Image 1: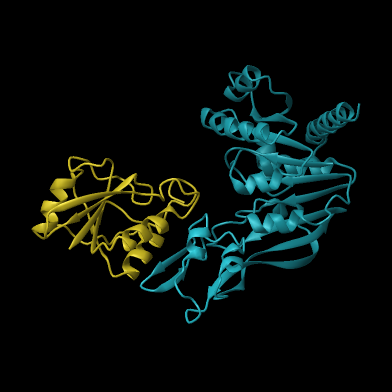
Image 2: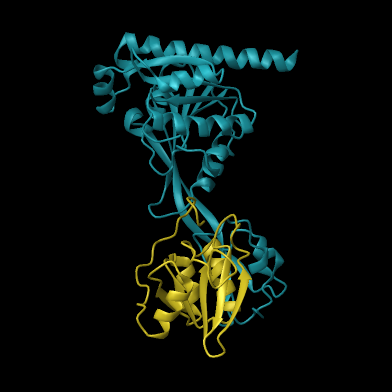
Length: 122
Length: 286
């Protein structure tokens, strides 16, 4: 299973990024092999629709689940369209969230905001 | 002569100034480009209204023709398209109607459909042509409505007053692109100054001639006035902080039509602006 998390830095000691669409990097963590991979989020400096492009990157990298503090409506449509499940991160530490996910204590993200549209994300 | 009335934030007095300037001009038209919340018509109560619908073009995909090459996804600078589970998905609200995806599709899988986003109402009030742009509730961008209003040869009258949307984003840029002069309306608050600074940067970037009108002017420290003095910005005039004016305005009455005192204030501002534009033209032509 490939777990995707928006992260601030390319390290397992990093914090989870507060924003999904314009996060600088994504961590892709392979649960079975315990291997990590960091990819750049090329959507981060998009003029608009960053959430859609970031979600496309998650889909293209064959994520199975996404752990994120928040996710906009359009990005969610892309992620869910690819049958990737979204869980809400609970703290800032990447490691803690992976542990919580593995023990089944993270809850599905159901509070989808309508996007920032000109004030950040779009 | 095309004059745009701008402000960084809503509620500073753009419409108050715009409707009164158009009312004191001899041969004027008033265009409301604040398409999200047009309210100039509440003052003018225009008659003989003609309606023009505004549509934009949105791509539509034939999934059977699409081979998943993603040329459209990569082309779109606004990321209005995504390719998920071997299907192309289009986000209408994100699309800026540039037609690029449709042109680039090697499979001709994309065609365009019309989507209505609002309308333009044209009427008349006391000899003043009144144009109002109205965006449908829930739409993301009214820029296309403004393009449609301003593409017309709207300079049939001597003075065109354009009531701009608030802020300094794309929609305002579209509004001021071809105007001769920008009036920035400022209110005496720190928040107002912050937003005034943003439109100030915008008009400079566009190389526009401009000046400031201080609204809600009163005796005492006015942060907006200080900002103008610090940045060498022309102060074109002042609208007093006056409960009578506030009352007239809140009843949807045009103050300059009602009261000589206010007529004089707005006439003076208009004359000053006309002089500024003519002097500007004299410099360009010399």
